[in-house]
Image (cartoon, rainbow over all chains, first blue to last red):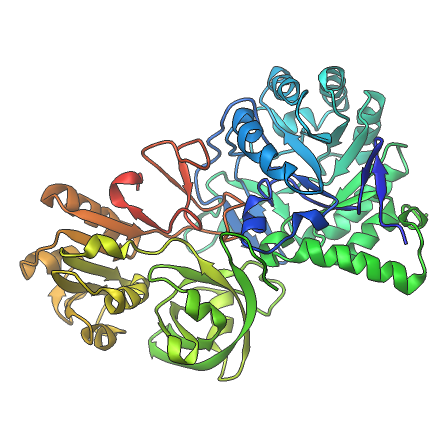
Length: 302
Length: 265
């Protein structure tokens, strides 16, 4: 039985990864004893910019039916701290490292990517889909042309393979997926959160200080599965699927829709053992159905 | 499941030992859990609902522990769907908890000094565990503020220190806030441990600046993970935070207790 997958020439011991922003750089869940990082296919870091970002005012998170809204605003310590502190930490483990990169301008992204060029990082995930920052983020990910431009520029400077992380807040996801592929992206990941809003009827005020936030959790899973399926049928590059994955069956569903890798996001907050349980559950599913290689199920439902 | 990290936390299924309502909307629940032995005064636990539509755990402060029987007490206010579900649990009910979380109060700062334990409303429960744990303070005064005559935990606190009461409507003790009670009763302290609503904590901070005393305040914010990864529950800090490298600290992990002078509230 082979649980390995390959994305852009990089082999992962299994398809299970962490969704950016829900796992820090792995330190907290590892130190607390919740997750053995050696068991994961990859750790995907919280988005990092060229300089530290303060993020948004609080409240930054709110619960919603079967999910949650967040408007953290990409608070991060900057690339220098990630290189000094987080990458050496992650190198202690036998797992792949994917750094999520954010910026306000293309030059910001390029600066981060260049600083990572000599780092022991396996892939770069380029965040062009954060709905919670005023400049950058989603602004690059909602128009095929701007997505094409940033992808091309980043790809030209990146030493590692790149994954463009796509937003669901678009009219046609296939158009965006094709744009990323045409500009040279090695893979795509989707979906980032769906822009949402919550109003406190007792206070008659927005529940988040940022007014809007990104919706995540099991509530968005059907939207994510649909978009992964559409994107998989539009491009030939591999897809990392995410959006409300809570257990191995959810992960398999994304793989059947066309995802090569899968990422666990909001459910880490609900059950900190989720990633480990999904790894184990995928193995059990393979045994149950006599699957020798995960290639047999990736995109198997047409 | 548990392993050998250096900041161990655990999620487990506990059992409700007993629960009762002790004031309107205020519930007192003892649970049997191995988290009891790790609990420090001022820490909290995350409590999960069984309703899958309410995914995120509810952070609830630890009121006290009974180590001999492996029990932990939480006293909470029903504020929404999650706490409403908890309030219906009977003896023997299974309840998923994660903990123990946060830093707790720096009890060593109380040694040889005059101490106030200030609690307001649903900020009162953690002060019981502090009152029980303080050993070498020069003096301990507990000042608690309520809305009205529906008091809770005042008798428990009185077992460990002298209790001074303030009520918003003046029905018991001093009419007004905990600061009004401190002033009316001419109480004095070198260090204050406080938990309560933000206006109370701001008043405590102002009191400390005026009186040259020190305050450690326990903060509250909307949380998701409870373990420091999501960056949902931050507070503005005076200096650049060691972890975030910006002027934001994580209340769930670096707090909830801060030196009042270190945070911008």
